[in-house]
Length: 252
Image (cartoon, rainbow, N blue to C red; front, side):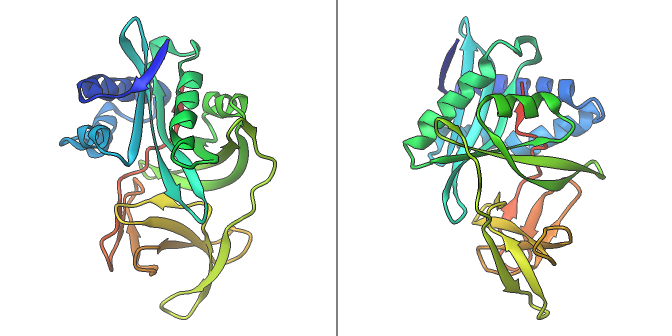
């Protein structure tokens, strides 16, 4: 089993793997919704642009020259340099063969060269296979957040790992801020989401993260952020935008 950088020629197989993996892992979502989501994330040449660009690292794992899995990751600056695993999928016919672990090793090797010491991933609470996988790879749970999928709310588990092993503790990047209405809120700078221009960070009414307030756009430093049911976000002030949620980082 080999891991290599993806090429534009791999794009059709990557999309097929994403579709098959999501259909296998998310039986509660209809195929039309999955197709629409993949079209939003990877359609109209977006995947090919990412493969040819420098910001996103897309790796594929192959078996007998056939692509059986892939991972998408990138560096993000959230008051520290993180290697963020945005998506990791292995075709259902090739799960439990070590492809996921090989992709994690490849991600670490690539992003360490870019300065990453800490890696972040997420998995839905109901995705026991993904949670067990990250734990086996040395990741530890560092937080939870809510995500909406098809108008239903689910709990998403956040994981982090240092190069060569799990971390024991993560210091929260919590800072207070004042909204346009003069209200004091608390912004979690360790739980950002990547936007087209800069990061979006969740804001809460309390330090315990129990009462969500909304999202903070770090590009223009405002809270005027709109979100739809698929977690597509856009800042109404500067048009910083984020594509719909990927639902889960690992399908193995």
